[in-house]
Length: 249
Ligand SMILES: NC(=O)c1ccc[n+]([C@@H]2O[C@H](COP(=O)([O-])OP(=O)(O)OC[C@H]3O[C@@H](n4cnc5c(N)ncnc54)[C@H](O)[C@@H]3O)[C@@H](O)[C@H]2O)c1
Image (cartoon, rainbow, N blue to C red):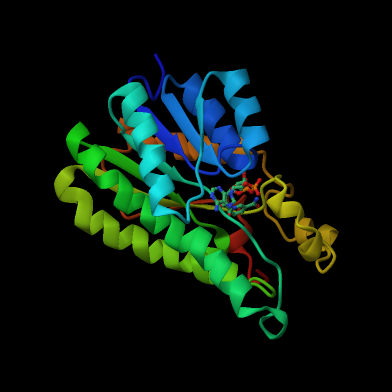
């Protein structure tokens, strides 16, 4: 028996990285999965390999949210789970960052997730319950040099999570945030960021001294998506190998 048997899930930004790991684990745990992205080639390849359904879905567009949600409900008759995973990172100090780049990061990471919550309320109400998992970051708790926009978006997601949890409990919809630390994906290897940080010193500052595999985050996301997390809402779940315990971080 799978943890997510009978669930229908929509995962954003699912074509690669952590999103793809969520897609794979959700399928293995018995869910039916629809995932969106703006990377069509990777998305179609993952769909073909796994049997999940891919839909082109830019999370900044309300129209594309409608299409993604309709894909899930048309294919599977309902929607129980949303994972707001899509995100971008732009490494720039405030002095050097353009206002357009700031808006873009907020638009995808924060406004995109808000549009998602707004878009799934009707189908989750119709299903009689739901779980929304917002992927924030450890940068939702601490600021980091070069990451002002990213950090603002991830702090903001905590606020949206808590407000939504209060608004949606009456419909049996739970809303939580997950805060990954250093996870081995393309985003963590961002060339602008890597050229500025001392990677060895960073790993030495960790409690668990390594980057995580994406699936190590997926297990926490799957738990929150499942009925095992029935009393969890409005909460923050850190998956950071102890990184935030350090005074230096
Ligand atoms: N990698 C890390 O160390 C780390 C740490 C903390 C939080 N996170 C967060 O985890 C999530 C997944 O990131 P990842 O590390 O797998 O990075 P990634 O870059 O591999 O994946 C992000 C995915 O989001 C997609 N995406 C970007 N803009 C989009 C848009 N407008 N609409 C739809 N999809 C879009 C990308 O195409 C990509 O497939 C992000 O929200 C990120 O901020 C990552």
